[in-house]
Image (cartoon, rainbow, N blue to C red; front, side, top):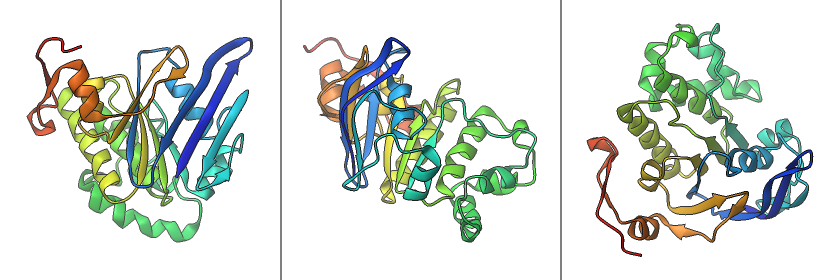
Length: 241
């Protein structure tokens, strides 16, 4: 569904992304992992049309969308959930969700989002600024779902959240993938992401590695999985390199 080839992005003379490539098959959940400053968010913002690439191509459903503006990509089925959530605190939860629609007929998707996230139904009339950080993240993802996207790009959804709330957010993201949506997840926390990802790319100094399965990465890093219901923790077992 999504194929990024040899993408490069610059901030002035500084190259933030250099020769990055990755693919996301339809219905898969792909994680792009790496430290702060690796270029992960820049990569996602460029795919979403918020930044112009200096080189490379972005293909979506076999069509070249390189450099296409973000509002046009939303209509094509690509939505970004940005780092930091960016909900409108003075507006109600319901109105924040409606901001995610691109046509009036999608207002009917409110019920779908409320069924996925009952806490938002309970607080639909409440100002979004009064929600907890985890609830605001759920709201930001729910807002993305309102436009019925085929591809959801999610940037650092667990940033600043407690382990329990992080687990809830990631469980919801996995649920969206299991329902057939294609998701590209950017995340600093490797332990968190490996529990839900199908495939993983690492990013360092603007470059991506070859794809690995989440199980392969866990084995290389010598982690044993502990379920998200137990807090999403991992246990270090010693090196196996």
